[in-house]
Length: 306
Length: 292
Picture 1 (tube, rainbow over the protein chains, first blue to last red):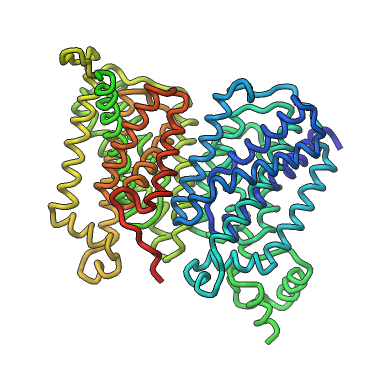
Picture 2 (cartoon, chains in turn yellow, blue):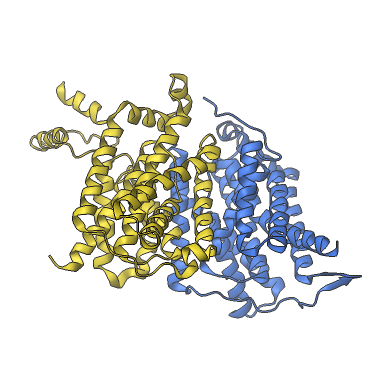
């Protein structure tokens, strides 16, 4: 396999890490995080400064990046997570801007707007693949756990969830922390794959791309997140010529999805052996009366059992 | 002392531009209860409308300004028609409206980059730049003019919302859309009107900001300041948005003048966080819990 395709695969894994966290937050908990690039930047700069200036081993630097990113999420989340969703979205947007501002102006540590060049490229394909596979496994289990169900309850109706004893603030904080850890890792890997970092890499455009991936695949489906991370990372790489129009198309795509099919490509469908079997079973006799894919999988299988 | 007074005036001047932007944003929020991220895109295009009216059509400023305002207002209506109405009539979650507005914002910004170009553009000089002198105090002529234009249009907007029959309908709709429609108010018409007013005030804010600084495709990020102003003043409250914008404007100019202009925005965010922690409803807002 040529170096070029290996590069694309690594980028897919790196994006997937950030998208998984975002999917958990936005899709499963209903928290709109518009500042994911801020966490990527925190991770990237932490890891890079540790490996280049203090010669810390790569893996230890990544762990440190995740820890710092999680601590940042507590700092941002504590005042804002108690409030209504809009405040939170604006706060995350502001947070990413603040991070960029700090990185640009603390020149002694971060190299200012020129960034940090010549970062050793430690990120290999097996490492990136392993990291994203483990992350996917963990997040998938989290979503199906008691915690995950509580998150969905908070998304569907926060007041009702609270009234049956779900501590919504706590679950939001946990989810925000998981997201920050994944984004921190993603940022650290990105820095050590590309080989240099600059504040402009972590602009609002990056946050936008990641949130579009979550929405495109289906906000309530991890399968959708994986699928769109693959498609939306590789497609622009392969179609270099249309680069300028890419973000125009992304914007239009988001509006069209929200207007026509807000549940995204996958809806809440997940790629599990049981669901695949159910799908085939349903395809063989003629398609039964179009169950909307937004409907819960359990509901669907209950109907089939009848 | 004179520097402090000067900074206060500068702060109020930039604050009045923020207020124009924040009022439109708050107006939409008060009716549809979601953060309209595309507000920035409308503002940016409004500023471009004004710029091209002055440079390409070569019309005088007094004609370019209404062109930009009406253009931005109509853009606001189109934006609502295409990106929000289909979601609204389905009674979908508010999150979908917010995401759709984000998409519209990305679209407008990048469409402008691709078609008009990514570079910064400077407005032609529409007002003489020499400052007014009052004793030791020199006040930028532009700052005063911006303040006056903003104050007049804000007064007009306040009159429309609080002094007319249509404004009454707007406030009724913001209080409860369903009951307002039972009283014979056409909610779609009111929403369109609100988007026109919001777009128009954003367009005006964009033109004034463009005259003072520059025009560029990402200038929609300015709405972040309007969000902060609206949050500081109390989301959904019009007087709150104005007060919040003034507080923010003065805070920013003081931070830039006495601390460091590079860290100016840090102070804006710090102001917002402090307000959220101390007085979550904003300076003039009331804390309303979610209703079941």
